[in-house]
Length: 628
Image (cartoon, rainbow, N blue to C red; front, side):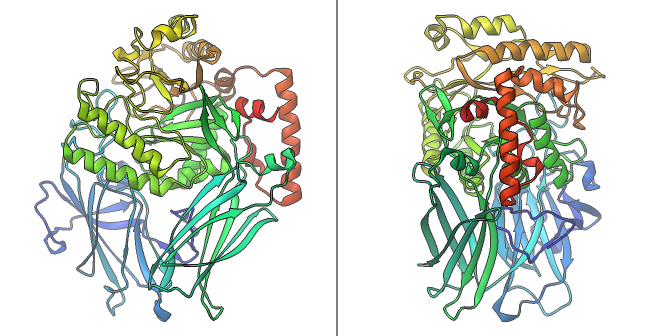
């Protein structure tokens, strides 16, 4: 294992791996005229995995170019005994081709999802092997999923610098001839069991068995062995139901108590030989929508989310380190939020790992395309399917959002084709994952959704109160009110009782330098900003119509200065004051419950060697309601 790097795929981890992050030879190909590695004119060096647009890459070129090239060498590890060498890319934006020793080994399209290549057949008997990567990424193409990447030369309004090429970790691992390639977990609290699936790759063998050992601290929950049939395992692992609610609750995952179930996976041959070994984790938790409420683990739960775009000034959409991802999760919790809406980005799996570990809910949202064409439909659908497959097993993810604010579907009210597209992707998502709600088009113009999301940047709290609190609100909200100038639901697709959430609001800008910055409204001082936030959140928290909210936004992002934190994650006013405004003052009863649960969690951890002090950074109002 690499001490200097965190394992890039936290839900299927092996010990024998090597990071290829660091210095690579580099070349810009402005008009994408080179087609083979021999064509490239290597004239620079880049620091992978940072995109060439960023300062962290060592290139810092934010201009227009259609392609770039990477090259590096590595020493092949020992592959005796039929072992294989698999090369992994976390994400390359947008189309990638990969050669090893001049042999094309992989092609992939999609800027936010991973791909791999088996290198075993292309290694040469030499001390060094050579990898070359071509990344094709037309900066003007509005039909591909691009999220917040600007199509103009300079970032404007809510659009940011582009990302080209490698932007997540590159790494390889040694695997056996027959290896565990993919797994998935599906918790079921009703049956008190875990659905488990595994797929093998490499040499096909039907004489192997997969052992799955599950534990929480020193508590052994299951130790089962399954025969692999046709390269796959599909099982429901029944857990011993402790019966008593107190003990059941100790095993449930929530923001208050993010209990993870550790999994040790072993692939055994018929002669008792250990073939492959990997580590994973899952959790017992259940997400549902019941009537007009969002429900976590069988109890109504108020969501307090913050919109998080996942950019850093020096490194774009690539986190500078694993530590900053952990710190972002800790900061969101410290500000009183129990979740984030990851906006227009499929985030690095390491962020999801820390959200799983520390207890932070996540809405995952597909980066938008901005044209509606057959090509855009095919590209976005393919990449969205890959994203769901990659992240399905993370306990922290509680909702999928395929579309935002009708981006890429601009004629939704008038176009049957675009409405069918939203409906199709909603139903496809529900087919791929029946365990989480899907927000078909967040913000307005719903045609298929499990939650109605409203985007309303009105800066007057009294108007927000009037719009969503009056007795006749439901009678006019979907017919006359038009937050953002759009109807909330399209004719023929009325609200049918789903939960309603204020999923974007606020956007109050405050910065020491006003020039070149942007926000929906502006505060002139830190004191004024704090007061505006308090007044707005006091109103929004009081609106019983909403089953949750999402404030815009977590941190300043380039010219957008409407974060609660500056871009370097320094708070604009004290974290404890932000938290108090976000969740409101606690009653004496809540404080008593908090103390009781802190003591019980601490004792459970001591008794069973579970977690650490970070396991319960903040208790959430929704969880307090559940536990009481």
